[in-house]
Amino acid sequence: MNSGKNQLTRIVFGAVMAAIICVITLFRIPLGQSKVHFANAMCLLAGLLLGPVTGGLSAGLGSALYDVLFGGYDFLNAAITFVSKFAMAWVTAMIYGAWKKKHGDPEWKETVLPLVLSCVAGALTYVALYMLKTWIFKMWVEPIPADTIPSVLVAKLVPSLINAAFAIVVAPIFYHAVLPALKSTGVYKQLAGAAK
Image (cartoon, rainbow, N blue to C red; front, side, top):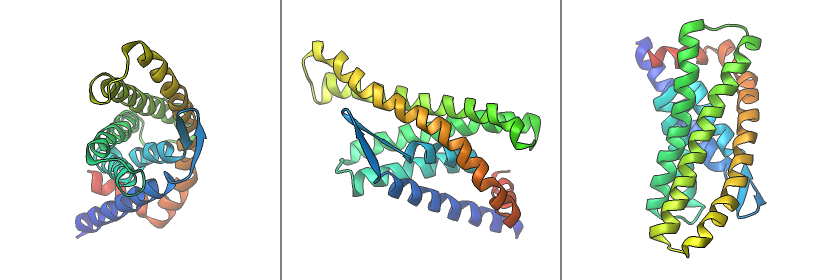
């Protein structure tokens, strides 16, 4: 009975995170050829709260839904977004989850460095995959002169790194902001129980 309730809580919470990620991606600040937004921070948060698979699905689905519904992207681009955002949350969750398994559930001050390092790994995973996608698209899908590709990559890399830095700072803050509420309501225990 508890296992079923925990699983349902996890599915519902994952769906809510996906919806938040989709909607929050609407709010963007233009920067060069890209935009800065909270979505990457929420993808990292999904991994931290829900673990690698459910967190990855939330991050990937929320971001892909934005691409299809509001971003004007085709299904190929949405699928690539799904994979890269899934990987972002998955890497974050795997690293932080391994640390928590070894150290238990310590005080928040002891979790700051592991949280930040997990978020750095997840955010840089996304940046690397995004740059790879950009390079492949500019080489073969939407070819441009080869000598212009480095400048296009730099133009995309700068805002991507700014987004990554922003997400690395914001995700641990959000995590510590919502964790007490999730623990006091028992939701955190259900999420953790469903992951076992």
